[in-house]
Length: 402
Figure 1 (cartoon, helix red, strand yellow):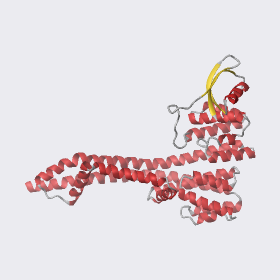
Figure 2: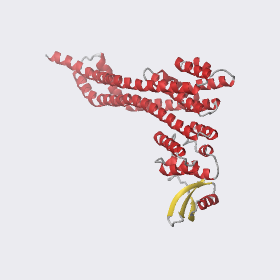
Figure 3: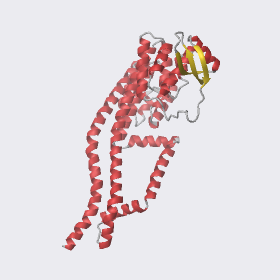
Figure 4: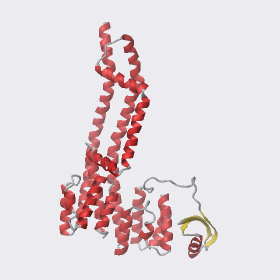
């Protein structure tokens, strides 16, 4: 599908300029005429290396996508057609990638295509969960309810993810500042005392010798430190590009002392919320599990979900493979088992998601109150070690002079 830059005139004589997507120039011309516009000029918009936009990951911010889902549901509830609602939201959204995608979808809708089919051509913008639930909503006639569930699901997932991110970002930033302060002391301050100690031929304690050795390596062999750090980073990213390496990285993330449990709770909340929304929207269970496996964001949990999907194909209960995995807490498997027996799986999963989202919030609040003093003790210990390494020989020298 190509993009065309147009210059048109309305029935009132007002001139408009813009861009649109169409299969070819004839299709673009025909669509503009159907809108009652007089085409003054129409040229294909060529994408160059300078004008091309490059995106890493999903180019639409979650906040913009949540607002879009809310507004879409409101317009449908007010009786606005899907075509008109898409056109309105294409003009209102602040996200440029989302605006372009909605303009393309609007053109596709005018040609008689379904919204889910049109959205599936923009998988970088619209996640698989969104497309599947919209398709189910179109088939059931409950598009409004589906959009509300989507907005609620994305909103809760976003809040949970941001809380985890804020809890883990603070110690990382403080830790980096502490390392920077220690490196500065070792490179700029310690060498001055090293020269003084060497000129006096003083007997140095073990802690001073250790600090001096580290200081010397940073000052004289700094390039080795950069090489080591670069190799660690390259190794990490290279391992993440292989399926086995990525699996073990995700495994280690779940096994870390403090952040591991928090990460596990966040993943369980996302898994439960996503599966609940998909199931409530009448998406087939096998398809829903495939989507959850893709979006859950952790390959360890994704492997468990894949096992559950394989078990379900063989006619076994969904909860059986989950019970065998250490990463799925007993509460989750019990609630899923009850949901399967009572026919209220979506409700049970929603309750699990509510519980773990609240648990994440409470854990984050506790961590914030604990991490700050721990970081201060860590920073004080690092700096105190260097200060002690400098002061102990000086006290010894002063006592000898006395």
